[in-house]
Length: 255
Image (cartoon, rainbow, N blue to C red):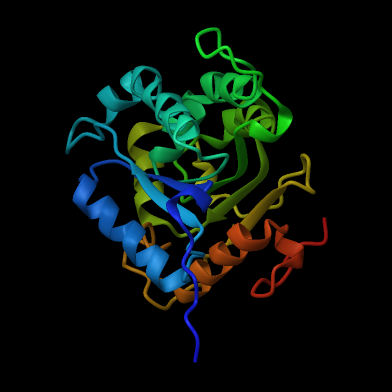
């Protein structure tokens, strides 16, 4: 037997940042990321973080939607702080309304990704391409984003920010069905399991409707519990391959 050297703090330059959804206390979000990290056996080189935001309580949903552009400004600031701490690669994973916080922050995220490697006016350093911050993947679980605006408007901006976008969707998501009926913003993209005919080499839709193990009654919050979803997400982070090249998925559309 021999000792396996553990990665030092300095060698950890990759971060997984989780953005929780509506009405989710930070301790609950941390437990979910811990569960996900443990079940997925994430690489020790990947540092998990929770980006917590004032996500509201019952009856505050409309107010949150109104405040999202303001609340979202803290996400790029958080990523910039990670960059200055030595992080160079980020994987963003968001759940439910947290996905809309990511989309609300896209203008600042785009500017951060483009400008991170440039020399700072205060540091006097010389930026180079290798030192830029990269958002390699963005993953949305059961996203609340309205489909009618997501595909024509939000999707191109997401792809200008990251290398690969993955949507885990469930047609029978009770929480999203209820939200669609109550708030009348159109069908949520998290319920749309059809192939998206845009930049298909970089956009994947994973249909989770048939999942039945460790899936709660609402079918809205099982991304950290269902072994198939967790294993596929782990493979996505590890390889950054598209869905057609990942081992646990079966193609359901030839489009």
